[in-house]
Image (cartoon, rainbow, N blue to C red; front, side, top):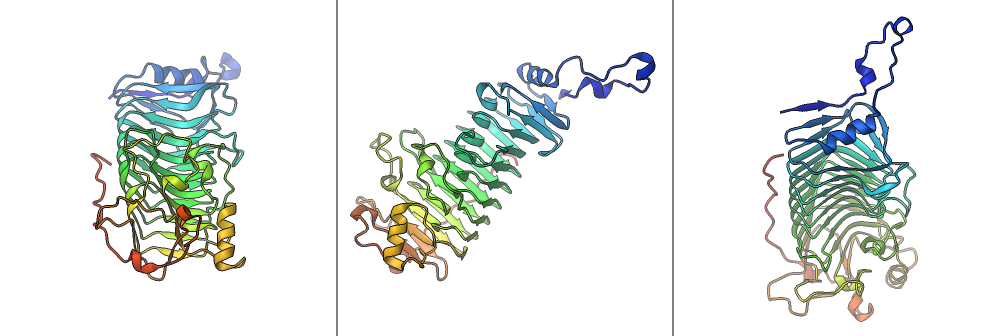
Length: 403
């Protein structure tokens, strides 16, 4: 394996006798050029090491070579800053397999911070993506963004202030998202149109929505089989700052977990607390804000089904719903000082559901679910726990080829 240790030349030059010899500690080439060249000329097996420091880039970085490692000295020590970026849609764009990146930060990109497209065997570990000005519609959409990938491990990362999703996995297979922290994003962690994902031991606090499991129409791959467990999901009450018209722009502030149009989703052993709309929100395509904005292909399944919620700790929440119609419904059902139950769903059921296929099953102590009956203009909104007394065959853990 070949290693490219990228350090400023000045670090390697002995300047002990600088006053006598005229030695200058200035590098012959700016570090940004050294790093960019290393990416553009990378060969399989290269390890590109980034020293401690903050390095400023004005245009995107691109890597298209398989089997490359990028390694910094820590997410608070090796910082790639794009605060003055003028060219490019991402900070770092990767189109490669067998890719590992760890121990760096990517800050203040125009668009997505780190995008990995169409790769296999992807590991993103201890990477911080952040927009340092805090939540703002002008921030880039995604922090960590693998899409159309297979065998993906995201662990120990931090994502802050993305205007769409801090940590996002889309149209992918065999995914593990663990031990990450997502704060002050619109969506903290989002799994979209993805098959077989385990999302666990994460902290999702102070986002608009903590953890989202979505299926979107007009995308070839339908997602299913996601387990969300052992996470801390608290106070995701940040006002929605997404660009209007985007899928997440309709997520009500105060949403702990949101499941939309996805099947075979298990939610268990989480601590979900103080989310002002509800600790769990379940919806179909028809009550999401993108309904009518995208063509609904005949093969798209718009209904959430085989949702299993059990053994979670719920506390607080439901007292200040983040959308006008939800506040009005809360007032009508529970009074202005009341609160929604821990779980709410739109109540829109697939009219062609096969016998024995349950939409939602709940085994979670005293937790209740409110059907808001959105398909009938809330006429029959209410709680009837008897219809959720069922059980769904539990999913197998996701096993990665290597982790």
